Length: 166
Image (cartoon, rainbow, N blue to C red; front, side):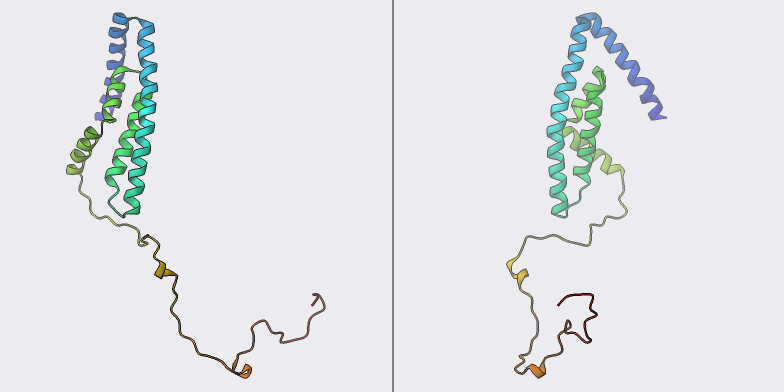
């Protein structure tokens, strides 16, 4: 039901705002504002998207809960879609979602209403390279006579077939 209301209400709000603002400042200024907000929004979304991706990679490499960086990334993506949609209402919501404090507040609001049953990270862990990892411990014994050696695995056990050269 809420989705239906949004699909009906948002276009009505956008049309009303276009009519009101277009009548007050003119058609060309209105179109200029729509194009300018799309261009500025694209630049902001690109920069904040890079930052969100960096935070997500950092959370994965440190084996932290990635839900907050994922939520921020999703909100930034949604913000980009709203900013590329022509309209003043969608631009206002899109720019609002680019404010990190507002995204954090939205994430905290949503987190209170969702109960996570379980969370598991991968079984494989990554760590910084440790020089002691290059050491392989093994057991050995010294062999002094050739008779003590086992036969070499590549030593011939039969005559060559003639199909190959020696």
